[in-house]
Image (cartoon, rainbow, N blue to C red; front, side, top):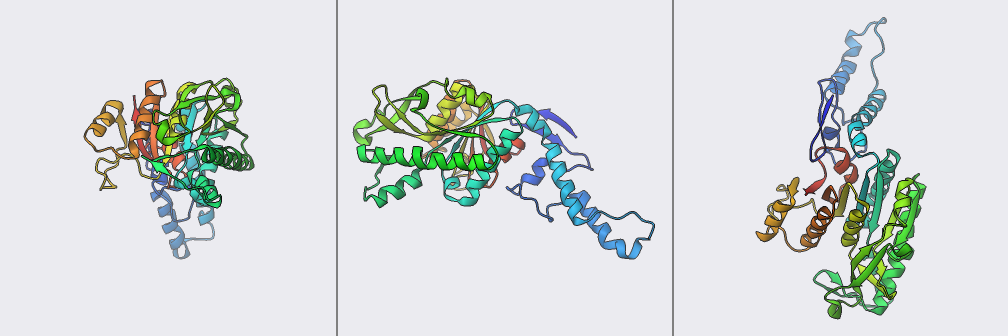
Length: 351
């Protein structure tokens, strides 16, 4: 198999005797099944079925379904090598939220993907929100949840709940899951080691303690990345006076990626990516540059909740991040699809 570098990833050109990684992962799952064989294994199956009429006692034993399954796994691992070589030692910042936080299967998929990436030499950093969990506790405490323009109105009581849920519950749950899966995770909030310094949102009068990232100090973060640990960052930070703020997790992920000089920023979302036509799920834009995506915003093809995500990607790219991707977090193993295949799992934006 020959492999060449491209702006998206690596193109793989399988010979007749090989099975491409991309073709396997088009099912949007890395679960291996006995029906996912390529042409070569199909011929072997036919040979097995015909063996009763043509085999002799001197013929060597034909491969079984189980052995073919093992061959398939080995072949996929082998063909992922160019991607591993390309990204080994590179920092990948992942924003985790949306449907991937609500589904136990998707949560387990994200954790396994992060651990696998870490084990093969990539340096993942996870940034998370926790909107659904916050809403549950607010409801239990009879505190109404309010939103304006997609942002949570955060008064003092709500801010206390946000800190409790994101830092004390969601963060530690993710750390525990990653550790159990075999990697070493370290939980942080923006307040730890002055990792993030917040400032009030321009709409603070309407939104309360909703903040923006004033600056990032990666001093506490970089050593963890360098020794192969997985930092897990809750999107809560304090201003220079110690007042906590609730900050959009996409924004935090973008600023952290820029501060670390990350190779990739990946935002897990509840949509397939950027669509050329909002009504056509098949109009997914696989790759686009900053100029192109700005034009789509001007033309009204990108709107609503996608605009802040796109702007986050543009800002991180402007600060040195190599690529930024908006991918479908509703698909199992979408992280591996995006990083380890040429096809990807959403929209990649380049500088």
